[in-house]
Image (cartoon, rainbow, N blue to C red; front, top):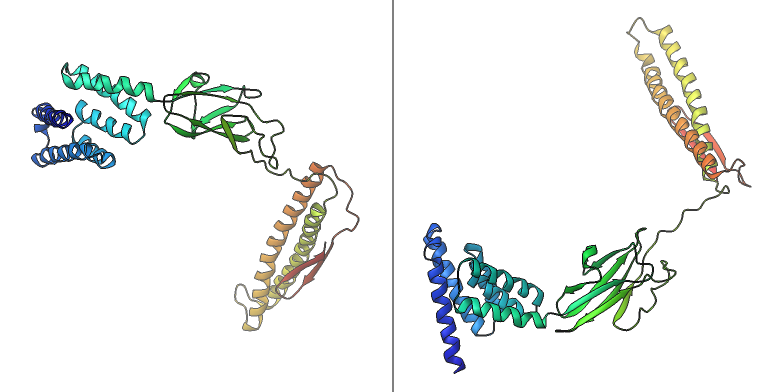
Length: 333
């Protein structure tokens, strides 16, 4: 009896899809039409054999060529049997609407309605309520932010575990895991854990949910006037300004030698090294001047912002060494 009924349904489905595609699908290529019919028949065969994943893939391939209420109905049926109840319910509802719009009042529409009504009783529901301290937080369900209209009301979900997260205005977050059962409705009251910190786990929220993770916070930067860093930067800046002055004088000396030994822009070979030194000193003058100005400026800002006006107990020592073509800075901090 069951076998004859299954064969009857398969035959009816094939006739329905052939008749519904007859006119509209002639706009498709003959190859597309033949492939769609082949894939639809393959999907029906896999569905009858209980290969729901394979049947779903076949029907989705058909849908990419032409979506009909029949195809959408079978896609929803496959998802239902794969445990994706919430998606399947949406598919049934849409297939029912499309079949009604098309004027289908036959066995297909009746079968869609029966499948939809049966599944509505199976789909579990989750109610998330704002608890203590949660008045202004964002609430996420499986990574998706819920709108205010969804808080405190039933939300259709699939059976199994679901992660509910609360995100505080400052960026801290905490999570709860709640298990829902097919055909049941669960309520989760989301309380913000007291004393939520980076080092303390969220307290056990009670029965029906499991804590998974607490918020993370960044360590506060050290403040105060005891840091030697501003004085180090300031010392380097002062040394760079002094070096800039020295290089400026050395550049001028090189230019004086060139003025005495050159005729216009023509200089003898004996002064080529002096020319190179002059260029080097000019470059070093600009570099050390810039470093010095920046260093002194940064140190001043750091000292003013930290409220410190006195050097640390052991002031940093900065030394300056000047060579023929280079300058070195050293010190003890």
